[in-house]
Image 1: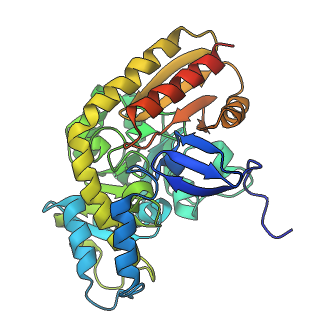
Image 2: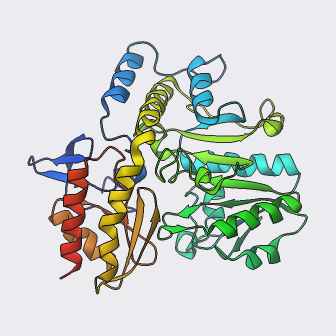
Length: 372
């Protein structure tokens, strides 16, 4: 055995990708409605990102964080503007680890409250923050984490005390079943958390980079978090993560408080910069595609195998009363790439750049399969 059996892999090898089309080793074409688990937001092998990578690869690939890095400054400005200070990591889990550490350093408190059904990563701190027993199974978790009920403000209030450093949440629980936060819940959460002297921490690893129709999901809820994290689609397939915090908290990450060998390396930063530029061109016109997406999905609610359809922007969950694992496999046979998620949910994360024709055709095929 050459590889650990920790993944369940479909018996299929892809050799080429372009925008929302993946091609296997037999030259069969598949429509991608997964974005590689929320990564290819501006389309696989995006021309601008590819060009930026090739140009950077001819100059310098790696630069340790012992020297100035103008590319990091550029990407940080595009990400957080003038209101946030940025730390670069290599993944969403690493970004969340940094957020947890920063919240504790800022507040001098220990406890982090997250939510049941949440997912924040598989490194030890991020895994302990994740509110899913299936992720914890067979392992001791770290102290300092508590879990409230999502969309239940009273459940959160019961846990708040003067030892709570921050409350971390996804505004749409992705791995947990594509469950959006309610606006009134978020509004009251911000108030009670700040009244407690704690920080509001938003995990935008899956919801960021235009996935919900805005650059970041918190824009849909009309507030600015104290800390937020981003990864997955940030460099459109090149591993990178980022933790951003309001400028007033920057001094808590003083010299030697945290670090990374590869974080913010030139290849990742060149891809991230190009991706952010592409996103700025896509987002002003994304609303029409989102409307089409949800117009097509509205008809799914009447299907006998569908319990509920929910989501935000280009992020949808179709809860089923039949095994989602089999549906994902059947759709792959139909040359459509999708994902499963919690609550027996079919998860759709199409690239923001998918053509309307390809999007409509693939959704109609899914509807037909679920109608059987």
